[in-house]
Length: 133
Image (cartoon, rainbow, N blue to C red; front, side, top):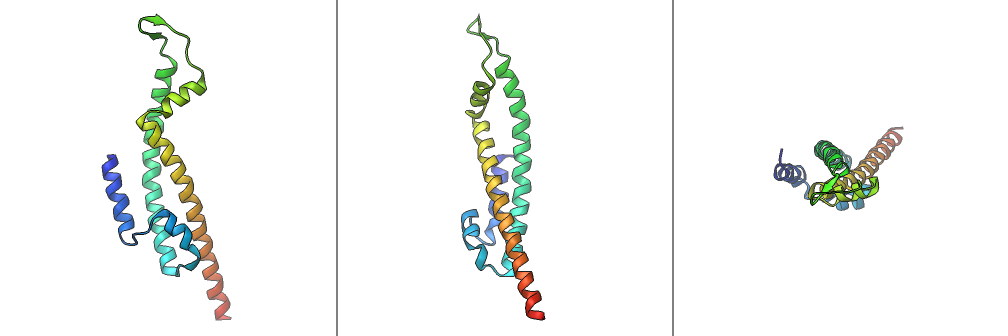
């Protein structure tokens, strides 16, 4: 699946609500049970897609990392291998590395929003139970 395909799916997931992750996180405490459930479902589906993409990028990074680390010749001359930190930086500076970092932090943000939505659903359930007593 290409990045363009993922963007299309991302847009499909959020087309029903037209809310960004920031909008969802800011409005969590005002959502109805139906909205809370809808956003949790949408974010969970998107989380799975992005995690799958991140896994593929991580696999590619492992190969790139070894290529950079094992590059012992530059311009025909023998060179000392870069440190692990320099190798990490070189890999992170690539287009794929930048996408990997973006996904890593986007997924962390999504985890927090999903947790907030779960908390909201729990509070709504508790309110429902208390009203029934």
